[in-house]
Image (cartoon, rainbow, N blue to C red; front, side, top):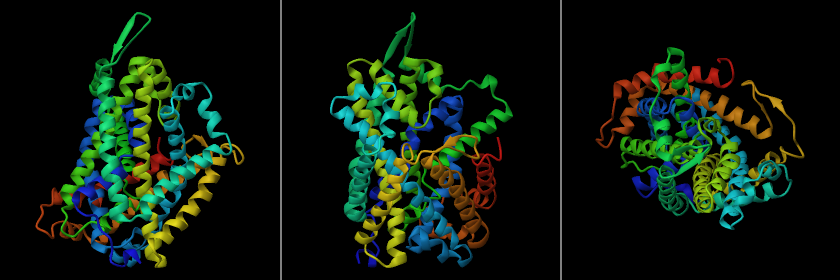
Length: 464
């Protein structure tokens, strides 16, 4: 079996690009810009950076260290640290298992729009009702979901070096090239409407400069929780992914520097996503157009913006949706790897067999998700107050409920049972420096559990 002697990334670069590929996903593109616009731009950016260097650093480093220390899949890694906490491994594997099928469904949507712009029919997707008509059809969403899933499976079945690492080394530089190019373009656009001209630089000012005149303690707490929530979902913790990738990280690798690099790439992608999305929204729709988030932002609002740009809009649309496709694919590959690595270890099967099994399961569940907008359509009110279908229910359970539980439990395991010093010893065993050891211990024992518990209550509707 391929992983009898556990595979590993060829070096720190391969590991960082793969882990950054997991972190840089759809959340950076359709959630970060909305939250930044909602929370005074510059204030949100500053809070996010501080949280990334503290909470994000602690959580991300812990999971990578757990993976490298145990050399196990997420399913079994936690149990090796403490038999009392082996159940965390089950939930840490259940999270990606739930996310993967509906992420493939969304990946099918991205594939549809990418192909539309690449084949020169991008203007059609901007028509009113196009997105709704597409996702409520019965066959095309399933077919495109299957295509996106099979592309991900090909990367996984090829292994850590020839699959995940090789794909990451191609897609991540391409992704950053595209996002930088679109961000530069966004800085140079302008639009005149009703005698008023708005420019990309005006949008950048709105995006980055906070209005502190209306900041109150309650408002700041809201910004803090939104930034923590975005960070929590963005860096791919509590999903088993970083534990799996950490198990492939060589003992000679530098965990601290790698975590800093991963967080830098994640923040840069999120910041540039804000530039490439918020600026055009402001230029063509004003401040009122900046309150859109989620799928409607990517699949409804942005195509209308590209159409408003005129002839250049088609080229920008191509770059944008190819970028979104790359971001979705790298994240999807990492989600699938967390599942496959656990299947391989638990059932003692080959990578090929585990990948095939997960592909079949995801095709079935992903197909049900796609049919949730037509054949199996129904609406249910979620604890947050929003209404949703099958995809929304799966997203709520995995993101709002299970992920915070896994993260809180991991903090308790490390902070109170295993001891932060064990993680510190793993990180520093090659003589590398451990940044903020006292702060790390405080965060794992007190800070992170408290904040994550508040976030959990907020995300399930127990706190407004």
